[in-house]
Length: 327
Length: 306
Image 1 (tube, rainbow over the protein chains, first blue to last red):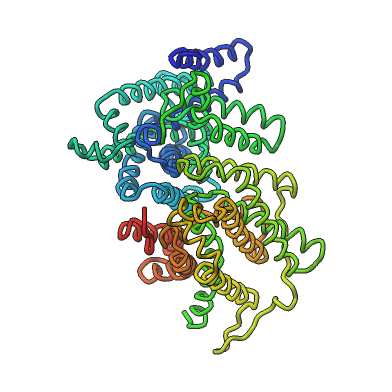
Image 2 (cartoon, chains in turn cyan, yellow; image 1 turned 135 degrees about the vertical axis):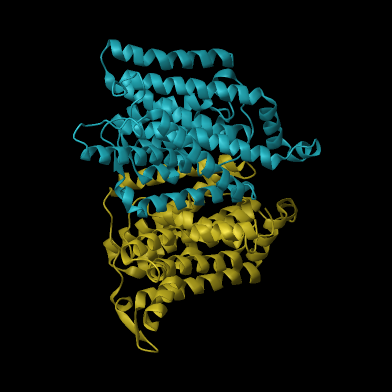
């Protein structure tokens, strides 16, 4: 069996090597594909904090993904329409600036996660799954009926937002930006897992009563985890919108929430690199199977079924021979 | 706003609610007895609708089509229970969510592969189409009225089955203590397959009945599935009575909200903005209703356990 640390390093190196190789052979589309995997990985790392460590099966994380997306869409749309009046072209750096958009996305999704968490954490088990699902639908239908920002058709942003010192339209530069963010998020996740907070949260998932008897409030631990988790997924949403230069209500759809959980399960629940492995595999499957057959979801379904029934630890669990966290 | 319109909308809401009840009853029964959260219930709804559309297309008979919907959905339900679902009892909810999500992917793409992406249409028999005049001079489509009647009859039948028959006793006993009734000589595996098939058949029936007023297409099951979840969360998971009341509440809130909220906002806003705000709020109304119910009672209106 392979040590988990080695698996992590191989994945990390692979994520860097593939885009560099794509530059050499001049295949910019591959870079975009890897960028997509990196962004989905950020979203899933976010969800993994709530799901893997906190045991909160949220079927509504698309809310935060979508909020991040719309934070980018709305800010850039205003900049875009404003500059269409401006004869000197794109001169509004203020709202086309990625750092500001990211900040807004993170703050908005953290706020939403706090409110949704306060309401949903009153319940547990199946009720929690369903109430988070329902919050997702609420945002989805709101986005559809809100015609100011495109309604069902969504918003197109013509030029990717900028980052000081970089040309984000060059695929490898945008990839680099996303990759650095993924590293930061993974670093934070690793620190959080071993910090007193992470340990307490882990305990709150397994035996909430014991956590309570030592004087900690499991509800509060879970709420904080949910907020952190939502904020990270929101950041990923803003990046995803920037990758596609398009936002639409599908970013809020419950299928997306389901897919984010699927990513984690394919990779391995509660493991640092689980979401990363899952996202890479998902994007690869989508690309290769999608090219082979229009009906690639059938195969995705079968793979998922096999993993749930026979390989609880996901891919990392298979490679390292250890089962993952129990949720 | 005339009384006629209000009565008509209330009937529409009832019809919608009753169809939601058919879906929610199966979901809540399966959760109550087996402790299983089944996302693939919407796929069974879709399968029922497609079976009905295919049989109606081949034979031209609406009654045969409904029979086919019931039978095919029940068989599909029994099959997935025996191959996949059976392995999920007693597993974590996360596993159940994922495995049934996988089933959705397989069923949706499989149906798209068999029938293509274009919607099918299911025609209602002549004797069920056309309007009827209700007391008070209201013209209302006979078919929708039939749906309300069918839904109420099925509800009554389900209640009789669970409260008054031997199988019903076994089902209720299975909810409380599965080891005990297995020890008493009831084949619990067969009972679970049966309960799952009943739930599936109800979903298939709902799909076929609603398929005749909407179009039959891939992905038609998921929006209804989520509404059915909202219904059973409001009603309390595992409670059929709760599912019935929840379904009517959701059906009426959704239908009446869509009509009356924009009108309400017109009282104090300019018409354009009022329509916009009103319809946005109406599309969220049932979820707001659900949050309110859960804040008041975290296990739903009639839910005994978490």
